[in-house]
Image (cartoon, rainbow, N blue to C red; front, side):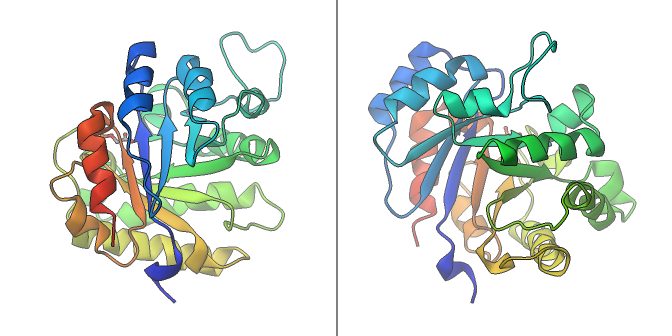
Length: 251
Ligand code: PGA
């Protein structure tokens, strides 16, 4: 079947950056391609503004993180259902910065994943190995462990409604994206894993690549069979560059 059936996605992970001015700048200048889905992940504080501005068009918005309960005494946290109520449609889960700096273990990621799904949001599950894991030949094992943890939280795992972002930790924010061959190899592995461990059509699951994606180099990456789009960090703060990345996924 292959890539043809999967609409490309270009997603912006603003991390702890941005402002209301940047939101307005994006609303005024973002291209709205019909050949790709565009997903924006601003800070939770800026979600409402962006979701409202893009309500009547095909740009979707979401958050970078939620807590794994619906409500309660969890000072400082937000829930997936609150995101949905505000007009958000998506949530990142398992980003390596959350895993490394905020205690998001595989078990916590699985719980968050479940709550995101239950709230009717589309989860974008981020997986990826560290440099150490890659250098010691454990890259595939690390990604498999991250996928397994989420699958085990389901009675009958299905990834049909989910996107996965392969983000090798060594490529995030380093300026050195994975080569197309390395990304393709892991993304094929992820698709095969999903095929063998869940119900639903693994050919329909969109698997994004993330880690130092820029306009330069985006065409070579998207040309790979199992790279269905990008999760863009640093370069997504510049609307011109982000528009060029959108342009690059046009087949
Ligand atoms: P980067 O970040 O594009 O700045 O490397 C990607 C990400 O962390 O999602």
